[in-house]
Image 1 (cartoon, one colour):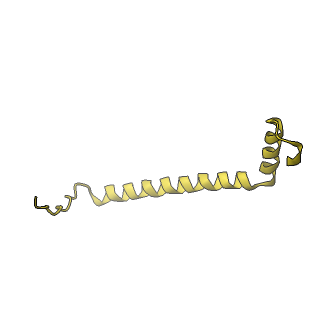
Image 2 (image 1 turned 45 degrees about the vertical axis):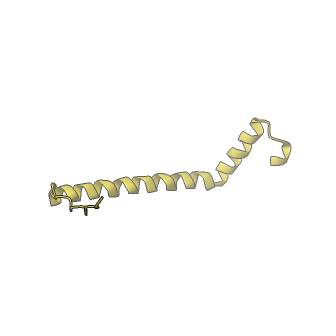
Image 3 (image 1 turned 180 degrees about the vertical axis):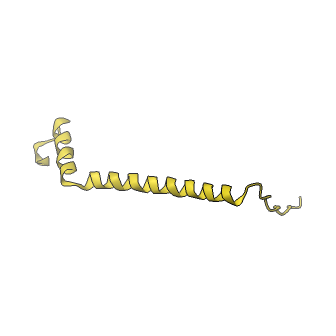
Length: 66
């Protein structure tokens, strides 16, 4: 069987459509980055550490977690 080379796709969209698509992707990636940053900030604060310690104690963790 002989392999056929792929033909280039036809450009069915306009430059405006491409720019809108790129802008949507950029906004989506920025939103993901913001959410990840917010979660990292919440998990690394000192109050978050004390909350986790309290959760461990409430779940029956030993006293050495103090």
